[in-house]
Image 1 (cartoon, one colour):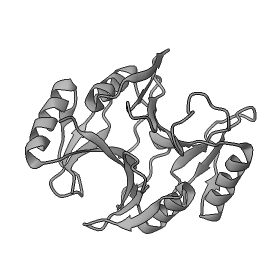
Image 2 (cartoon, helix red, strand yellow):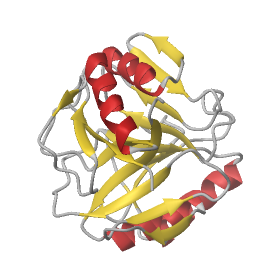
Image 3 (spheres, rainbow, N blue to C red):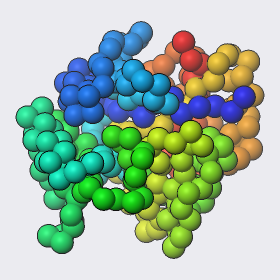
Image 4 (spheres, rainbow, N blue to C red):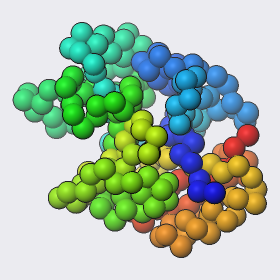
Length: 240
């Protein structure tokens, strides 16, 4: 069985504070996980969670992955911004212009997020996290489409996006030029399978698609760390 998107993993110096920020902004539950991690989970069947893990990893200049949060109305957008600031977020400048309608913020450890203005047709009906927005090549978008068996919903001018057939958040790649890699990324995609037997078979399938094995730096027991075609770490684990 093809692996499922299990989590977007965030490395944090203070995992509890970061998890509570995201739980508060998203309206999701914050729960402890085995092994010391903290999960941010939506309890209505959403396909993935946020997993926040304690680490000493320094933050690079700018993350290669960030979240685009949707807004149903201007009032809802304003409320999201206020809530994020009250929870320890901050306004940041990553090169946006005064003409941009979205608002760029960061969580308490500087991890970027965008609050998207209402009326975005591209993010309509995707949920509060409209997109997991990634820096990446067209080729890596094709890889992840095959890896998750999610169809491409955008493929133009080297920008790609995929979405589960069941709906929900899109995963997008902005296309070249790629950001410079400055140390280990703070955000990663985690996949999961149902059993140890499926784990080895899935790792083999992903390597055939273009992933490569690397030294296992995972803090999740039994997980296998891989590198996608753009050099991004991700891990495959067995669901508890």
